[in-house]
Image (cartoon, rainbow, N blue to C red; front, side, top):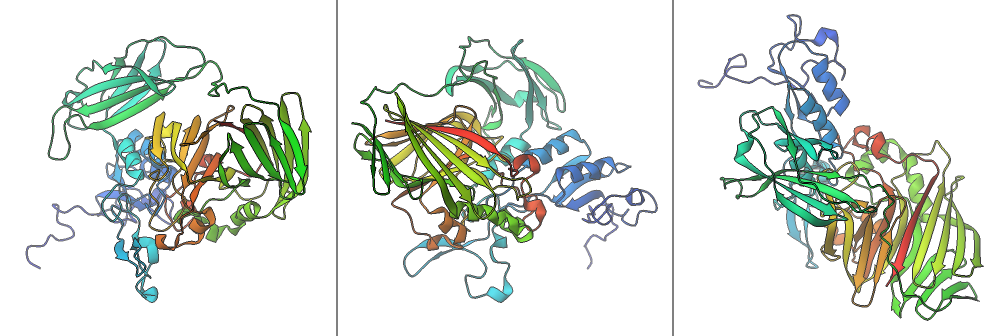
Length: 561
């Protein structure tokens, strides 16, 4: 063993993950005192603390030992929610030296099935079921082919070397803090963009003083004229001046977005051509509301909209239904194992009993009201469709849920678009996949993607492709479009070429059969992805990122063009 450092050699850094903690709680007896049995360590460390526990690790200790979490957020599947909350604690506590995500890269193995389908696989695929942890090797922030997952963008944001805060609209200033320990800000150039409803109206370079490490400065940005009823955003970027071994010149290393409060309610609806008067027809189990351009077909036995046609263009592949479930993520499965009551919302999605179906014809619209009982509990859902001759359909939604039920994975609508829809333009957070607890790096803007390339699925099939903070989304084909807004507040949506329940049940991608179209989820709310670990209740989204069972009311507006 000659040449190896001994455990007590002063040149060797000593770490023990249980140091300074007893039974998961810190105690006065565990502090850095001569009586501390773990005083030989050089740091205070713990596995998978919450942000609150991480803060406690620092604030309950005496002495000068640094604080770390040797593992703290588990990147298994669609995960790593609440990352910023964790780092808000780290940035506010100077003794906290950092933490380590588990882990860097998926350990999937690429195979091609005998049917010619190529996919990544994991333990258990090779008849090794008695000697494997299955997909627990798929927990990286990058994929097995070393391409980044969406969470990498959130990592970049929370780790960035500059912090931008304290926007002052009256003075046109904000604060920049240099988080680095040795490098000054003159290594970087700083730029700004001002956007109106997602469109750039002003941009340029910012004058930044040389900010020393661990210090701050107040920065001014140019004024601009505001229009009432518009939404404004100030985007700020720090970029490298010169190329290095690891990045190109003008690479963005830090960024922030300040969204301006709007004085007047936003209205993204557009004026449609006036069309002929609506006519209501009933035939057997169908109710048709139509004119020369529009046809909305209801199935009176289910209450669902079964067909939506505008100017001869058939829009939907399946009915519009209430939806409360998502294809379970790895973290969802860990939580459901400990709280099976959550599966009520899966039953509520699959078992919807029609209670009432009524319609009323007015001078300028037709109203159809439908009410369901969900599952076997006293939970009810009401649709009120207000249909206008110009192709506008307002869908008012009301969920009445008794308290005491488990938290709801999502609240919204689900349908399927025909396969001739090819792209989506949206004004909201993007461009990559994001969720309510993993969207700080996703800035509000106008984005466009083809539906074919909208998002990449995970190796173990699960919920994916979500976009949050959406003001409007427009789905387009060569024959027409559907514009979706939610006037009262922002919404979320996701789109993918599979049945949701197939994603929920599959364990390998090659098990999935693609639709001749796309599943579209329109969500009033979807819970976060969670992930402080993936094997206990710490896998669940935090309370502020969850959806408690209670009454909810929301609205979507569909504009057919």
